[in-house]
Image (cartoon, rainbow, N blue to C red; front, side):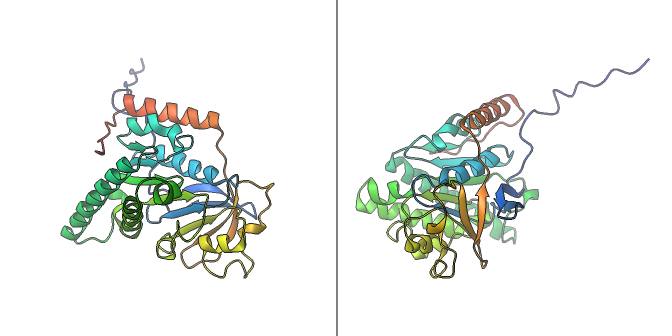
Length: 286
């Protein structure tokens, strides 16, 4: 007689098995080879004209992040329709969603600044320079869609200035303490993306732009004249963009695409698995 199989349902939770420390697949290059990003230790700037495909990339990154067991989301989206699709999943994972509310946005960013300071205090106390996957720490991914809304459109000039300063601090100091920033805007101009902020992003994705200058604002000065001009990307090729990494040369990438139906399926799965699995989220206070 064969022994009865053990009941594993009570010991193995049904939940995401990816990690934020895993390489993130974002699409293919012009030769058809897969392209991966090391998102934990790099920030990413995602910019270009409306309809160029910025949301394709950011949805791809958000989708990977929510399938990771070590991810806590902070989502800021004044339009609601992009990152707002993940609100229920964000709640289930102990994260925060901010809509068109700069007051709440500032409160959240100030809170993140304090969390960052505490994480660095821990690293210093343990003689470390960055967190590793073996530390079993939650990666706090800060996703900001339509950065221009919070920095030029809503609120007082003082609030806009503080928002930019807080984002710059997070981008400058967050990556070593597992708090990467992914920011998107459809208005690549120097008032929204100052050079001092742009150069802090280790990854920069330039979707189709209206002018070579706009392309350079994203990728860096001189790349358009060197032949890497996002204005030249065809309007018939949404989701195609130039990607540049630290110290590298821009190259073309076609972002992987998630349909709305697939996103809703992911949201349902993440929400169900986190609420029913053995992964009680630790809320990040707003």
